[in-house]
Amino acid sequence: MTKPASDTITESIYDHPKYYDLVFGADCAAELRFIRGCGERFATGEIERLFEPACGTGRLLVHLAKHGFEVAGIDLNPHAIEFCNQRLRKRGFPETTWVADMSDFATPQRYDLAFNTINSFRHLSSQRQAVGHLRAMGDCIRSGGLYLLGIHLTPTEAAPSETESWAARRGNLAVNTHMWTIERDRRKRVERFGIRFDIHTPTRSWQIEDVLVLRSYTAAQMWRLIRDSEVWECVETFDFAYRIAAPIEVDAGTEDVVYVLRRR
Image (cartoon, rainbow, N blue to C red):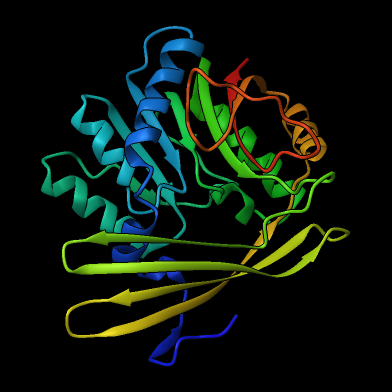
């Protein structure tokens, strides 16, 4: 993909939580309705305590806290955790997120529902890490509680999407995001994507460019992983439109899926 002719820096997008938060905040209202709807429909017992692995900037956690839920989360990036805890503190909530590896962590208590809706799970690069994550999540969610896991699958009977672009604005700050496929290695189950934030303020325009290395999953591979975790049952599947009244059937052509997993 051709770069715009202006300043570009090559850094992790996760080290820039202000821009990351704007870019990935567009679906916040739909996600919040979906999270609460799943809790009401699929969990057993009351939903009061919520947990987010790979919580990033806490865009969902702070809104859920405003609605009276007890929230907590983890992320591997300290910049994101600092941003998230500051956001919680400014709104009068305790700082309840901390730096941890989502493939191997423990929590001080059990939660009723957890969510990871924007593909962060695919940063886990091996089967051992993926199974470790699902088992660690099993340890932190009570029996009958839920884990909402969103993931882009690799379709085997349709051509996968190769590019994606979208725009977001907050006040005088605008960020246009572009993603494109660099490489897909189905044998090694590795996909590499370029991502660029085009950032515009009244006084400057510049870019942050990064490469995301993600593990790939076909529909069959994901079902096997859920089975091998031994602690979760899938009770429903949805797409990234987050419409609680419109579940989907996952097949070999499906790309975007939110698995509603219930703790056995």
